[in-house]
Length: 266
Image (cartoon, rainbow, N blue to C red; front, side, top):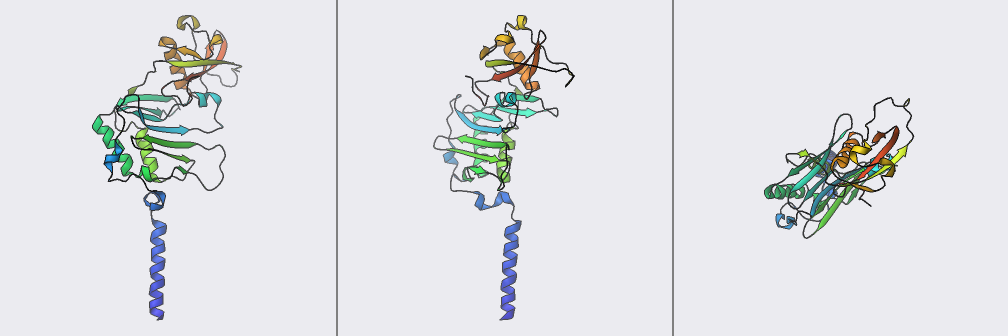
């Protein structure tokens, strides 16, 4: 009898050890009922070029500078016709925005990957157990014809499969990227006091005459052409502190884009 009891105890210890060593990304407890890997027929989407199918976002947190929040863009977006945009960053924190095109077959494959990763069975929100203030949030939204799903992570806690999908989207999902150029944007310029001795670097200049936009009067002004291109260049070069000089006066630029901006134009 003692021998049988010892064998039983060893079995329980082994089972618990296997459970503890199971990778987080493969635990079924991370999943909820929903679209499974086999139900590809449920992955139909709206093919309208204006229909948003996938959106990835990265909220940089409440402690970020005002300009960073206003100039923030969605990390990646995919529309019904396969057009995709995504954001990358250089080593010196300059922002790069790309646009590419997925074929219908590539779109179907992307959505199948989303399902195969168990996205439609993930929990709606993940967060650490401890209280974390002013943390960042990343998330993915998917809009299909018969259902929608949003999954977000505040600071940490989401399984690996979620991060793999997020990384896939912000890398362009296999599309060949070309630089994205907005067609219109809404600009507000905020005059600031700038002490040269604090940060002795050369600031970009704004030629009000050549660009036909005086930053003293730029309050929710719609831009196109050269003025938009200049503002776009400045905010991408330094999204957190996009400061320009116009005739000896310094301004911080807030550029809202109707298609990519997290904060929509007013």
